[in-house]
Every structure is written in structure tokens, then in C-alpha cells.
Image 1 (cartoon, chains in turn red, blue):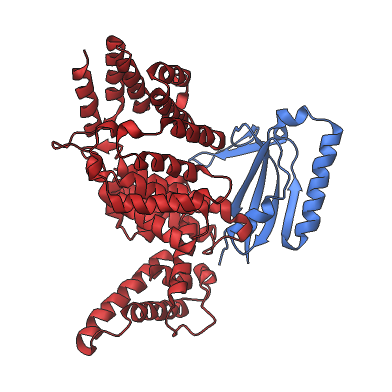
Image 2 (cartoon, one colour):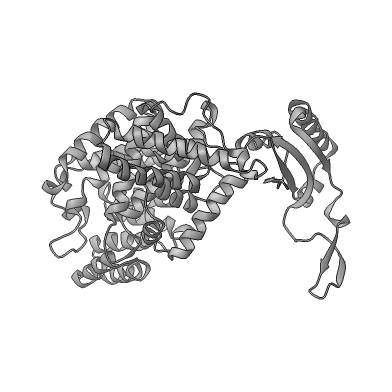
Length: 391
Length: 115
């Protein structure tokens, strides 16, 4: 509804006011006249009419008038489902425009697409509410002043623009899945929102392999939600998880989606990440994990995405495919990577390999380093536990 | 229709290492740009090198001081500009991408409309 109204007002704030007016009107009208047969369409039509009124009343000399575009077809006609979805698509691409910084894109997506309040968005990223409000206000101002258009990009630009949207949704998911700071292991709200967005994107662009794969990746990773923590809230390694607690429906759906996207030609990063998740999800027990397959997939992923974090994950997989020494050798190369210098998982991975090689003192050092670097209390407790279990 | 200022930034030291053929290639690029997007152009010029710049700063008391050099010391110097007319940022960016900008890049800034 917000998206449909923005199409008229081109101004997020005014659109929000019109939507609220429509809800207020609904409360008043429906209590007397009963609920209409299509309440969604009623609300949207009222919001759009209000938006057109607001637009007409503005002084023509006002600069923002230039941005108001009224639909040439009668605004009275109720929107079809197709039009609703087109507007949400336009909104996603606007929020994720390349001229906006990534954390601004994420904040806008949560605020405008998921309907979170500024307070909720601020909490999700542990930013002061005032700072988040300022960030969102600046973004809206930039969209208006620089005239970032409210449209789905041209076919030729689409692939590049979709990647930004996928990155934002994925970032939302990973932030929620393992909260980088704080007492809880994950923020379920963020995870749910990311899943919603991934589903929406998939329904809007069902033929894009990367879009399909992002949804699969989220479903497969999130399927383990119920098994990630022990009885006392402690963090469990993948090896320790009770796989009977994995959510079967999510896994089934995810595997079907991965199957579809793998068949679509040269796999992109999300397709490969989803495939790796699929290999894990297909193993009914840790010991049945096809590690060689996973290493092979990481090799392909590294080709398209030469990131040190990917190399780190590959090294971990290698330690299980070919033994902890092989893993340690692969990790040693990454020691010099500036991007990983404050990344707790590098030290934790080294610690794990060293422990498996019975190099206890070195393992302790590595786990202590990791514990210092993580700001997530559940993870820190896990690392302290591993230190205490050494020797 | 809105207007955008496109600023062309370029590292002068890198330019100094190039030959006449390179300069000609870039010149051709600008000519091609002018031909292709002529209808959208409202102005544009190359600027003399950064060392020719003069800066003027005025302090709180109203006293102005004139000094040698550009206002901000940056790795890439401002080398030229175009004024283009475009409906929205995406159109402006699509036009700007055809401007040659070796050893640096472009900044696209909306021009404020005074009512």
C-alpha cells in the first residue's frame, strides 16, 4: 500500500501520512458501514486519492511539485495484485540504489519495505535512535534532491542492480542470524524480515537464479535455528547439533530451490553458497557430510568471489576433508589479510585445528584471541568453554 | 527537467606519463560524447591545471585571504566539467558514463533550482 502511494507522491513522508489517513478513515467508516469486500483495495484507493489531493493543493512554484506524477489512468480503479508487486519491486530498487551507502540501503529497506519503525531499525543495528533517524532523513533527502527515480531498472542494468538488493537482504539475514553484538545469539525479527524480503523478491523475479538461491540459502541456514543452542542457551557447533531439531519443511523447500537454480547455467555466488548449505542439509549426520564436495564448491566460489572470508570458510572445510594440518596450512596464508585482523572466526578456526592436532597451548592462545575479538556474549561463552575443555 | 553538474577528476601526475596519442584518444572520446549527448548538454569545459588555481578564504571578521592552489588538496585534481540536463539521476549517470575520465573519475551533483 505504501509502495502504491509512493508512486503518486514520489515523497516517502507524504506517502506515509496518506496511508495513515486511510487507516484512520477506515476505522471511522467501517465501524458504521461494515468492512468492504476488498479491504486492501479500499485502503489503497483512499490513500492514493488523498495523495492526489495533497499533490494538487501544493503551490505550483514549490520545487517538489516537479516530482509528483499522477497516473494518467483513473486513480479510482482498484489495484491488481500485479500492480501491488510492481510497486514493491520499484521500492526495493529505489532503497538499494547504488548512490546510497550500503548501511543506508539496509536501513531504508527495513524502514520502507518491512515497515519497521525508526526505533526498531536503530535497535537492530545497535545505533542510537537519533543517529538512525538522521540517516534515514538524509537518505530520503538525497532521493528527492538527486532525483533517484522510483522505477525498476532497465533490462540492461537489472543484473547489476539485483546484486545490490541481494547483498542487502543477505546482510540483514546474517546480522539477524548471528547478532554481531549482544546477549542473544540471533535476532529473530531480522531473520524473519530477511526471509520475507527474499520471498517477495523471488515471487517478483522467479526466473533469476541468484534470487532463487538467496531464498534457498536463507531457508537452509535458518532451518537449523532450533538446534543452534543447547539447553542452557549455549552455542553448539554444527557437529554437535541435534539434526532432528532442524526444520524439515524449510530444508525440503530450500533443496528444491537449489536444484532449480543450479540448472541455470554458470552459478553465481548465492547459488554456490546455497549449494554448500544444501550439502550440509542433506547429511543426516555430521559424519555423512560430503566435505570433498563442499571444498569443491568453495573453490568455485573463490573463483567468482575472491574474498578472504570465503577463503577462511574453505580452509575450515578443507580441515575436515583432508585433516587439520591441511586446514592449518590454508589458514596460515590468511594471517596476513588485513580484512581478517579483527575477525574472531579466523582465530577460532586456527584454535579448532590446533586442538585437533593436540597442540594444546597454541590452541588455547588462539581461542583466547578469538574470545577477545568477538562481541557476541554467547559466542564468547562458547570460546571460554572450549578453552576450559582443552587438555 | 533537472540539471546536473558532472565534475571530472584526474590525477595529474599520471597524465604527465602519457603521450600525444593518448591525449588525442581522450579528445576523441570527448568529441564523441558531445555528438552522442549534444541534446542533453548545457555547458562544459576543460580547466587549466591545478597549479593555476587561486583560493580565496574569508575569515569571521570579513577579511579575505588569497592564496596559491586549489581549495582542497586531493589526490585527483578537478580537470573539467559538463552541465547536463536529465530527468533523473539514473539518466544523468547513464550520460555521464560516456565521459572519458582516466586516472580518476566523475562526480555527479544535482544543481539546485532557485524558485
